[in-house]
Each structure stands twice: as C-alpha cells, then as structure tokens.
Amino acid sequence: MAQSTDNLVEISDLHFSYGDRPVLKGINLNIPHGKIVAILGVSGCGKSTLLRHVGGQLRPSSGHVKVAGQVVHELDNDGLYAMRRKMGMMFQVSGLFGDLSVFENMAFPMREHTNLSEDMIRDLVLMKLHAVGLRGAHNLMPSELSGGMERRVALARATALDPMLIIYDEPFAGLDPISLNTIANLIRRLNDALGITSIVVTYDVSESLKVVDYVYFVHDGVVVAEGAAAEMLDSANPFVHQFVHAKPDGPVGFHYPSKPFTEEIGLATG
Image 1 (cartoon, rainbow, N blue to C red):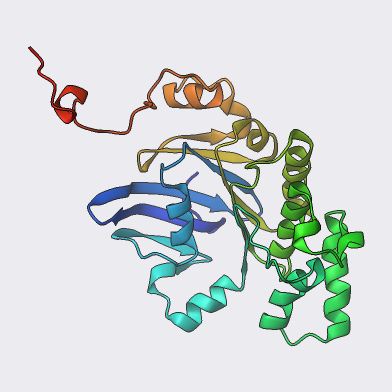
Image 2 (image 1 turned 135 degrees about the horizontal axis):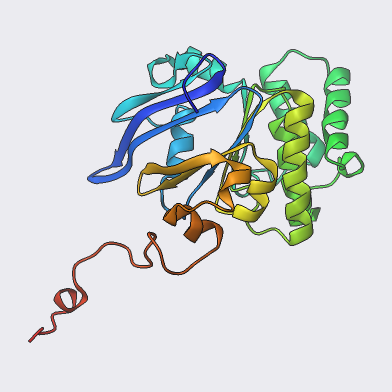
C-alpha cells in the first residue's frame, strides 16, 4: 500500500533493538483509514514490539511511526497521551481489572478521560456491552466470565471512547472455535459500524484472513510479503505458503540461530 493521506498509520524504515539483539530491521507498512489490516508472523518476529512503537511505548533506533500525520516518538507527554486517548487496545489476555465488575471495567476509561455524567456513562456502557451481546452480564465479575465472554468485554472496552484506531494483540489466542469466530466477526462488524481503523496482530491465519482487508507478513524483523487477504491463500511466496498452510518445512526454521550443535556441547567433529 503506497503512502498517502488516506493512511491513518504510516511506518517507515523502522529499526529497533533490545540491547545487541535487533528486532525490527526496516519495517515499512501503512494502515489506511477505515480498514482492518492484519500483521501476521510467528512468535518472536517483532509484532508486539511493532505495536509498542505505534502506541509510543518504545522509541525507534531509526525510522518513524506516524499516526494521523504525527511522528509518535517526537510527541511530548501531553501530545502522546492525547493521541493515546484516540486509540483503543485489546490486550492478549484481555487486561480486565479483576476486582472491578464488567460495568466498572467499561466505565473506567469514560470516567478517567471524559466529564460525562454518571447517567450518560451508564447508558454508554450498556450500549457498548449490547453491541457485543453482553449487556445482561454487566454486574458480573471477570472471574465469572468464560474466556470468550472476557474477550468480548475487552473488545467493548476498546471501543469505549470511540477511538480512531483499535489495536488487537493476539485477539484469537486460546479461544474455542465458536468464541474465536464470534470475536472475529465482532471485529469486522464494529470496525464497519463505527468507521474506525483496526490493526490485528496475530498468528491465526484462518480467522484473520476471513475478516481483514489487507495483510502484512513479518519475519526476522522485516515485511516479507503483503497483499489483499483474498490473495494470500493461493500465494506462491514461500514464506506465505508455509505460514498459511502450516508447513513444517520452509523459510521459517524450527531452531533459533545458534552455534553448531557439536561445537556448543564440545563434541569432536572428526
């Protein structure tokens, strides 16, 4: 996707290292307004690190992330917090406050970031929960929810402030097939109904390709393939083929890079 004013997020030649270990090695990708874009890759390829740059938790070694035309790492604290208020986040493990009810979890960001009356907050909370089918669960505690219900509450909370961007970090992990399909359909429906933009970071190929508009495949710190979701199933790209069809052999190796085995354990090679 070429850079343009139609993009809400633009990531250009992004580099980042944890100490001496490079993680992002020149990422280039764009997220258009109103679309759902998936970032796919195996565990440890840098997907979550990439998200932390979008949210301003990390500063790049070089390159930049622009959100709504602003370079994220150049913002001061006030500017960064103002931008984050326009973002929703659905965490890998839902991130609900365990000692607050579903209603209080939903109301928390509204009370924290707005001056709305309690009556208005109540109505908005119930509306958001109704959209994910859980209005009747508003008095339950997180410990009383199933895994799928907990994810749906987290999804509703991500929409609490009507953000311009929602980021989903592994939204399908650990879900049964029915809950997984429900969450995937909700992501698509809410994105279209609210006119927002979504980034889905996942390694679940089958579900993500059903609901997203565009896909970036990340491996070893760079984008190795990209394209419309419908094109990916039949892609001839070796990495995409291995990832989409879960092949054990291909560009993605099983072993983490290391010294030769015989050298590591001190065995003679002769």
